[in-house]
Length: 426
Image (cartoon, rainbow, N blue to C red; front, side):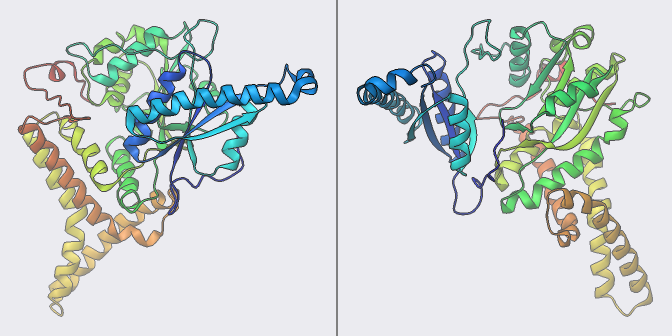
């Protein structure tokens, strides 16, 4: 299924909408609950669609068209009344309502094509064994488990006995055919992971998101991660296709149950067990999650100190290293210019400018990928300074007992737990 109309839901003057398909399955209430809560959280709207199937009633329409059509629409509006009230009670959301006649799939695509603000499609899914999609209710997180890893374990337990398992996030979108190509490219690898193209539309996203991927690739070079001869290991949590047999032989998710950085831990687990992995980047896997400045800051601060193994020495080395690589060149340039015409100042300014230019050139591919102006490249030192601040903030939060904050919950490693189960990347 695909649409030809460009989505404009996150452009200025537009508001994203979550489309919920209202049907008669028991799981529909779960879909409404999910959409209402998530839409309210991100400032989106909700639109509810009820489709009146006509494929087996065409002859009846011709006979008693007016009566049957009126009854069908009355029933549809009654159902929409019920779920609109439900959404309003859950999250104070006032939903738009749409009733259409025809085949469900065609009407869903038709509405998406007509409304350019629809950003997310939410479908109810049955729990019967005959369906291809099954929604399960999660159980409380057991002691010693990180929330996301426990969710992954529950999904793994409920999945059919297949060769591959795809771990993904709710805000990740896939271009048509992407999953089939992932399976085809897997070969003998235990893990194939794609770094999603993150949303880069707001001012905060344009400033910080390209650098987030840039620094991730510096920390986990994709070629090294994908090489069977290199010990470097990582993955991108938004899209991880895992061979089930390899995961079981490596000890299963239980081995990384407390890992706060679950994707890196999973890649490390599989590679240490002797399996090949692959990490790449694509524009066919996209994240639709919007970020503001605070959300990006918290995203980095939540796990940066974890990645440094809660080590003050590694923290100091990281801060000094980032300052040396990214802050010293512009500082040398400006200091040299301020001291002109001193001959030593000329050399200082020249060396600083050369280093600044080189780092800017390395940033250009990331800007080009996100379709941003290349003149942004010289701002990399400023952005690096912000990431230094995020890293320091991560350590400070840990010392205050607020490390790993997520949705109001904290998961410090003090006292065991995370420290016992975390895998360090080689």
